[in-house]
Length: 215
Length: 215
Image 1: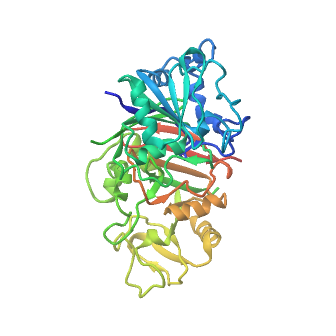
Image 2: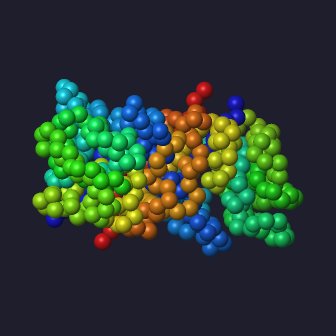
Image 3: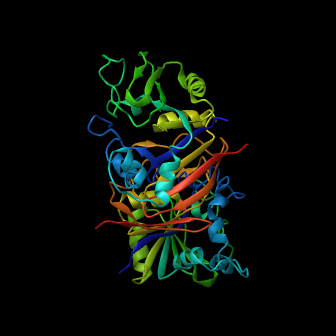
């Protein structure tokens, strides 16, 4: 059965999942890169970026599991790029070059319609204007029984949480303060929504939280 | 040299240091007690409450260290009691009975003057109306070179953090979501203020964070 999951989602000690002022130079916002050090050190991520070596322990297990059994992704529009408002043209094709490492259908939430964008290697970006329910329905159809991963950003994860649609999350708390940015816990009551900690594992680079929705 | 410290300060995974609606029945706010399970399980805390037994590992080491080398405490007024506004009379004498386990001078921040309250066993509550600087100056005078512990609540810790007056914090993150309440990270930029993680230790009941102010 298809699950809707969040995996390898990095936040700071103070709960920020991205810095402020996302831009072409700063896709993760100011200082946002620091949240992902644990991931970039793993063999799984290094391989994805065409690099050798990398960490092969617990962090890598989480990184590797984050890509397991996926059939589709859902992304907020700001995860797809820095363009805001109506698409000026179709020149922005994502952060990831002509052959993104997703290799899956990606459903991008946006208020502005755009034709599907087929990249090399099996990744197609579909632009969904009907909100989170439509994106989920279409992703389910595409996923063929495998899981659907909500890739972010913070606002998109919170929208799906608020609707109690997420089944399971792996959140990696990086050992840094960000101080400002988009906070994963502000303005949303995880407890009332029925989410609870299922597991906690510490490594030198992160505290890995596994969180499940109660039945 | 006297340090200003926060120790054994418990928060939830989502950053709340107390629940909502503090009252006589709920001194820590709704569900706030869950934040302190790790502490109440330790030998140190059990002994303080006149009970036998208790955990003697890492949690207990942190609990025990939280009382080491203290010369005075500073508390926000809500830590002292549920009374708000002007003191109707002097009948409220703290949550802790006639012989509080502090055994030290305690400086209580309040907008409303009140005569010092001398309890049994060496604890005296001093009511400070001049704000955090006056409380710190008086606590330093009383501490005789030992450390001063800011006991809370969240608002008081944040006031001292904001002024960069706190030297070191031990924060215990309990493995629960609180969902709402007083958030230790909201509206304050720990990073900009110069605070950074110095150490992280995990136990079944808590993730212990040691945080220091950069020089």
